[in-house]
Amino acid sequence: MKNTDAPEIRAENAYMQEAIGEALEGIRLGHGGPFGSVVVKDGTIVGRGHNRVLSDDDPTCHGEICALRDAGKALRTHDLSGCVLYTTGEPCTMCLCACLWANIEKVYYGCTIAENSRIGFRDGEFDRLFGGRGALGDYLVRIDEDACRRLFDEYLATSGEKY
Image (cartoon, rainbow, N blue to C red; front, top):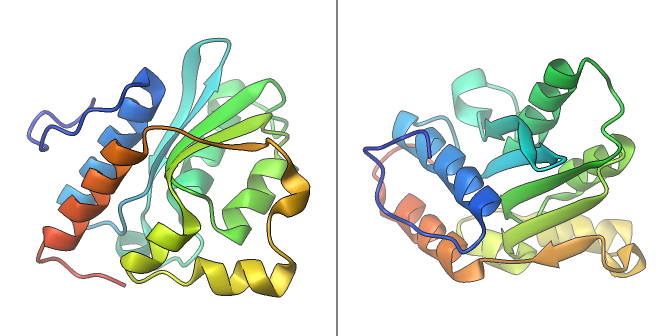
């Protein structure tokens, strides 16, 4: 985990723990919501990012997008075939489509779209608009939900700007 000053929130999966660390860094810096992500290829983290919507004044600067961009630069390619993504919250429609576009093989997430609404996000509205996630099969896999819920609680307890 990058931020040693962050509260201790432990996930079972080491990659999800890194995603949580990214999210905690973003929360601590006031960059945006509690969303951190890492991209993994062949057992190595090749990209990482956290939500930077507030710090960058960019509504598209979600944790998943930042991690995909970082992985593309590290691997010197736009095609992330062979990579998987770990993220603290189930990806919004934009991020989900970006993962599919980048050829991410699988997405592991902690909190659900419904839980994202608990902290003020409206991802469920967009899912309904675009027909839901039923056709994705086992592309999205939920892991470490308790650790990610604690992360969301930590975010809600902060006094910084929220959106």
